[in-house]
Length: 492
Ligand SMILES: *Cc1c(COP(=O)(O)O)cnc(C)c1O
Image (tube, rainbow, N blue to C red; front, side):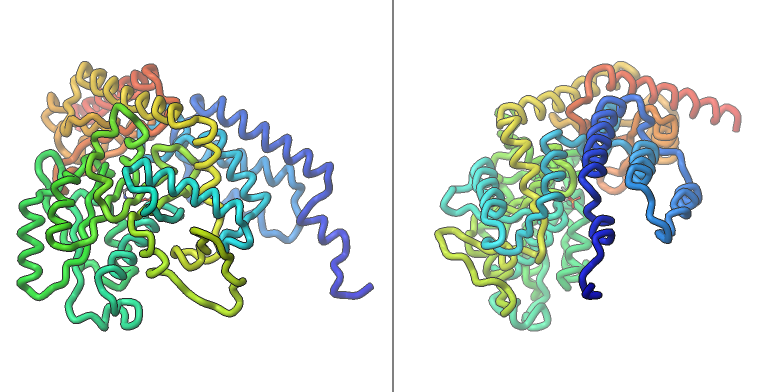
């Protein structure tokens, strides 16, 4: 036998034989289905140390092949036991979804068919599915169909990174050749003090540095202060700096605040600055006839970040970058390499490789396509409105239990304190309450600081399965935590 020809057994250890594959398919199906039905009864958060997990992993030294069923069960058991379950209806956390069933199906198919979306020619269907979605989503945000362009990304951070690169390309003709060093003035951009911290990271990644970020203070409604935005732009120009971008946040991570989009877009137009709307979470409001008007003005933004793996509930990661400048992505990312297959011809045909940050790329759009195909706009509208209604129901229940909301708003993020308690506005007290709730395993909740220094408990409805009983469950857990905190205080 030619030594280069693999022995059948070696092939088998990767593909496995049909009987084993059938068994694995049944086991996967059972594991997914029992997770979906059992998750409300699991602890919301694990109770485990790094040492315990490392001890479990120690037997996997890969010296002896493990039976596929054994390996699968090991992983399934640990995923059930050792993670925070965003799919739990009492997870009131950080925008992480309970995945749609069609999203799970999509990611399974994507793993099996493994489409490679670098170039159109390799995967005409997959690339066109993503283009189809980009056009529909752009239209949903009010962009003109003839102008819409965009790309799928791993998440909101990559979409925001794309926005930085695109706006630099638009503002500075020399940026591509000479880089930032070739620019005459230091570029600066504006984002509210409640904006997302991915801009900190992406500012470093683009080589702008964190000093390029101008953090604009917010009103007591947590919205960007447009008077101070104008002042800051004027001061920066006077100081010889080069403003190029304003980021408006449509749904802040802390509290769901939406910056005044129409006013900011007027400033951007007057100052000739790119306007990017970071609507990673809040963008989903566009799917609800009841809440859509909260995003009025977003159609004026030059580009938009929208995360399908947040409020659209598809599995991570599914970020989306949209723009109404159809040439900007190609200007930003075009490349030519001899080994890249020849470009396919046709109207609107693009090779994602010259249109976005990634190179080899996964078919991210399929989980959005299949979820949307099956739920329809209407199904999504109902779910988003249900979650908003649960947010309002939670407000009522918290108020009845003596908690005080700090930033009342129509979205399902509730920030609150214990105003009747002497320490009830203090960070250490609120953190102790959150810790009690999380360690009880009954529910998951977190703390944050609004405007940097106002500590609050934060409960966000991130799961379409959350119902009134789950809200009551959270309020009951909070009550127990409050009682325990009082007992600990009495003892000290
Ligand atoms: C979540 C979020 C991001 C970051 O998105 P990832 O998908 O986590 O990378 C950016 N901006 C806002 C407003 C967000 O809520």
